[in-house]
Length: 125
Image (tube, rainbow, N blue to C red; front, side, top):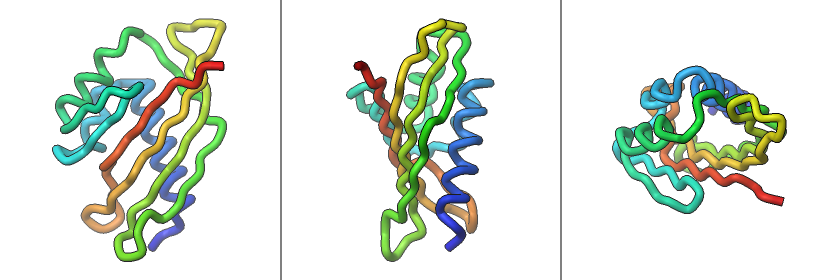
């Protein structure tokens, strides 16, 4: 298995760059078996997940990642759990929002991974 921290870092960078530029581009990272839990609401399948992400009520967003941690999630499959915390700058607001997100990445076609599970929460103080 490749270094999970390298894979996680590359995935996180790609995910948030794509999210910030064109959320519809995230469709390639999900499958019909994928599930997103967004602020407690569960959404299943690629189309429904992308619909949720593209319908979020802001035009511009920038993710600023503070931490990213990775662990293998299976002894028999090269799947990876990735935990991310950071700040969201929405529509140039001077007050960023804190967020946390967890991804469960499943290997596919060699060195490619897809998002099987995605859990997102805003962190209110």
